[in-house]
Image 1: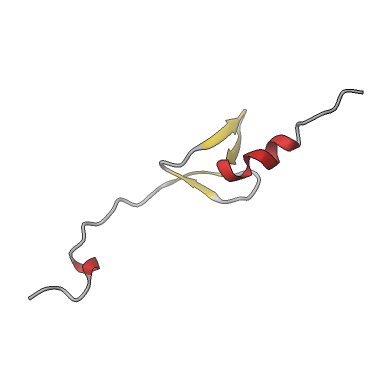
Image 2: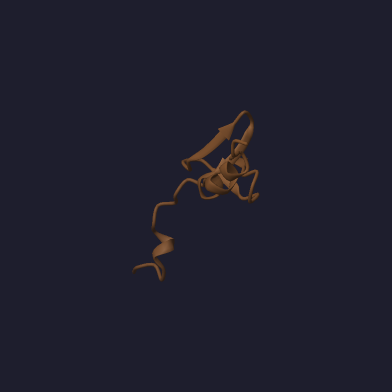
Length: 60
């Protein structure tokens, strides 16, 4: 007799733990995900380009 669903016998995966939140989008950053920490300001990889644009200056 087999279970009705594969979820009944598949090994359970460990749950990810939120380690921080992105300053730009507010989404959680979980264990195993890459992110950037600029002196305490945490930014996820998806928001990196937008975040860096705020620091771009043009010489006058």
